[in-house]
Length: 313
Length: 313
Image 1 (tube, chains in turn cyan, blue):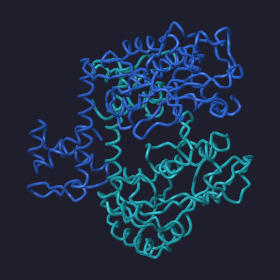
Image 2: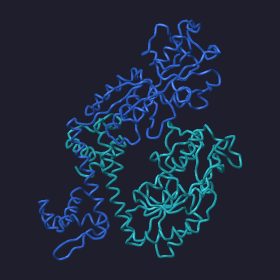
Image 3: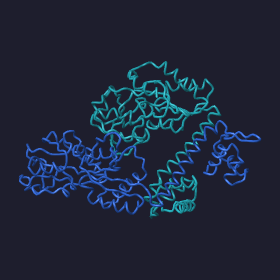
Image 4: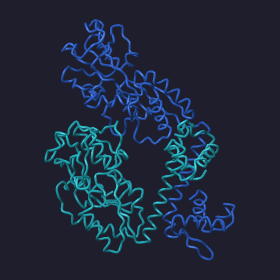
């Protein structure tokens, strides 16, 4: 069985519908059916139950799906690595940057790279996916928020401190306060963020707060973007924590940003993959370290021991 | 990109020669060379430095070869897994019910598992309630069920509620309450404690869902297990608020069960270890979720959401 069949199997398992899966794969529906039948023949078991409305994955199909995903992830990794090498050869750097930090330290950083002759492509991701993008090498390097799950990545000292805000529905009694403490939102539910349990948002935004009595709602849909996060807050699913700078970019009448006063700010660090072979990496790290060295040790930056541990690893 | 191309890439690198790699693959040298060329075009990089006598991996080829090996390894695992599935050899999943079981859900799930997951051997067991986390973390079971609680320790995650059960009042036959058909919270004598497992540390499922703060209204006494609860109720030392399944399993000549008007339903959710990447465990969880969604009382999840929202309380 070839990679294409595994890919089609995964697509159909995801869509549970021949038509939609075929459209996404860019092939005709009968061709998709043929591929699936062929695969079923090859593995000698039924992977899908044909139903009136589409296709339901069987128990055997469910068992294989995990393995299919791992295979496809390896294919995607290989493509990302090749794309990185192409960028490297072309002198292009793809840099992940936080949505709310498009000014200030980020522009200093990007300007420094441009001055060194690199073409810089930037892309932004949701809080919980910043580190993962570096891990999967979808970007060559990134500025990401700590605390976050940075296992297997290299990170610098912080380049900047990022104050956090509590996001509340605008009609919440606390929404008009000038600032808010964790005690004000104790026993509130927090909008659950997508991503691995210990990834950025979850770590930044709940671990510390769980001790303060906040609970992550397990029954609500996990959000995967800032838009969804704001929607969920507006709909009263729960409160959320996010970088305060977001307020400038995502203005909504039904959501209030209230600065969080009694909690350490998040920290912006430069992160890269240890197996990253981009020719620009050495210079990127140099620029990042210079910026980190000149960063004013502001409020909350004195939590250095934790960070030093991260950096040493 | 296909499996053949990746195999040629890896073999040619290993042999240091297109000719020998072609021999291994039983194809012509030109055909192999062409396939590698296709792969290079797709990835947009040069994989081999070709000289008159030999070929050598290029710098990019050296970087990408581990990714290619990964894809081939994952795909081999997929094929292997498919073989296991088709031969009916796939792991054992140990599912631990709460002490009084899943009630009628057990039979539905068991039938669905038998029908859709014949390759997985599911072993059912039961333990005292409030132990599921320890049971999971000690690897004594792979899936447990818990009466809903938000205090999951690190390392386990609670799935969506799959079963909603009415809650009954367990009361001593000699208590005046036994004469009533249904009991409201205001009927409870002020001094009569409410008994529950884990009440003292507020871990019982009752507390996460309770629309009123019960502890503010009634004295509570923590008991270690179901049997103790039943004995204490029989001696009229207090009353219990128990799920229907409990009443079905635990009988005592001096204990009667009465409808309790003010208690929210009890919700049962599956729990698993976070690090569990076993496909069989996931497949079993999927079957459980699907079975629940087909039941007439599938409302479990909605009821749960309503019970938790302020409006529903």
